[in-house]
Image (cartoon, rainbow, N blue to C red; front, side, top):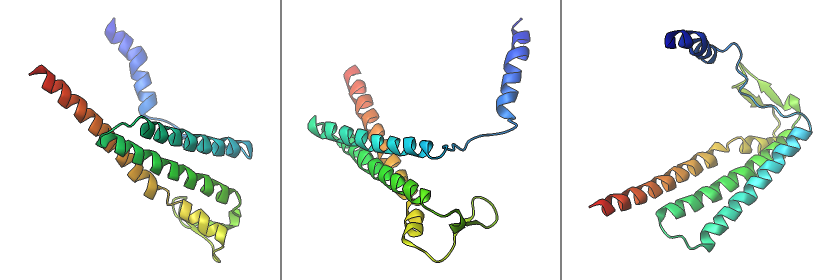
Length: 157
């Protein structure tokens, strides 16, 4: 009975998940409403992180984990601002300004460089802000875990 269930349900589901025909991992926003909503989400996220940062400071939480969490808030808000500017620059970028050399991963800007093209290029380096932000989030969560694990181990002795 169980073997029949596994063959009829789980095996096809597993094959469907592991052998996809088409993967749609790219999210494309319809113009122009999709970009407006996406930009509003960036602004909302900036304000949410600002409030979270302010609330941590207002509550006078002490400890290394809270400082790491504050750094995460600052860097992620900066990343959101950079992404907001990058989306705006990308919307004003002429499609002929980008040339795909070999594949879509090798796209280059066509000379001459203008302010908008330079801004677009700089904002594509957003990972230089976001990766450290995620590292600070990791450090903060690890610090919280260690403080809880240390206090619960100390209470058992």
